[in-house]
Structure formats: C-alpha cells, structure tokens
Image (cartoon, helix red, strand yellow):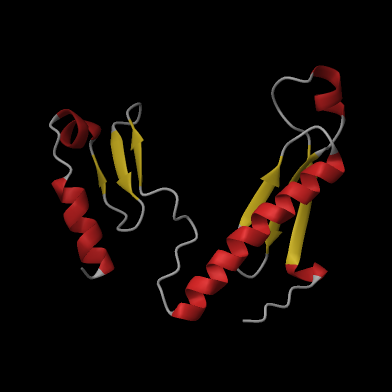
Length: 128
C-alpha cells in the first residue's frame, strides 16, 4: 500500500500549555496539535521543547494514520476513536456507549450492575 501525504494535508496548530511550568509555560506556544485534514485524526505534543513536540505529534499521527489506512484497505470497519468504548460519567448520571450512541442513567448500569442493555445496543449497531 502506498500512502502519499503532503504538507498541505495537515493542519499544525501551536498553543500555550497548561499546568506546571510557570512563566515559561504561559508565555511560549510550545504545544503542538497536528490534524490530518481528510480524516480528522489528530495528535498532540505537549512537552517543553517546540521541535520535540512537533516530532512526537507527527510520530503519533503517523501510527494512527497507518492503522486507519490498513483497516480501510482490508475492508474492516474504521472507527477513529477505537480506544474509548463507553464513557462512564457519574457527575452527569450518564453512561454513553460510543458506537451505538445509547445513553443510560449511571444508576441503572453501574449501581444495579446491569450492562446488558449496552451490550445489546452495541451488538445491534455492529450487526452481530
């Protein structure tokens, strides 16, 4: 498989980081977010040095893009956010299944230990 990417296929954004680091962190825009425009896949470098951040962001992005295009070539379903299956948010009293889009109250799923509706919704969505 040949993948040809050009500089214009990416959007590079620089921004000030947050957290520890004081004056240096607040004054300098060292953090880098690189986005592949066509797919919307992005990666972030948040260290102290600008060049290191850009390099690490491109390396992360390259891995994600290779994985994405391999899945696309083999005909597998392509989900960019494969790391997160469900969000459990107790403060909003919500459990959200990412694939099916099903949202249910926290108490119904976690407190009653009843994840079956989420599994059924995902199976239905994925065609299992």
